[in-house]
Length: 111
Image (cartoon, rainbow, N blue to C red; front, side):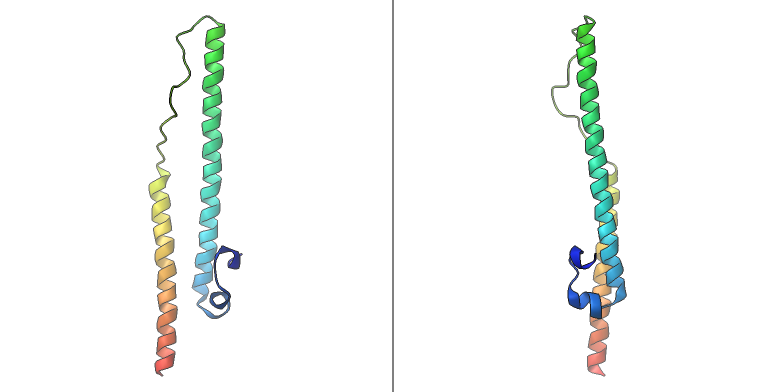
């Protein structure tokens, strides 16, 4: 799993185990983000279908003032900030683990 997420062979076998945990966290984050995108798309499609059916039924009942929206709905995703914060935390931890690994290698070479 981690190798398919971009982790190199050397990182997997020789680097700090925290890096592996970061790749796993990254995979879980991407899975949840993709799942959220699919759910949001399905919800929006349902809303458009609901509007279309409501307009048809209104016209069928003689109310021609009801119209289908002329432009797409404006999306306000409050989770974007949370997603960006989570991604920043993942990136910070990943970089911290890489730097810790490099520092330990440098110390070993100096001894």
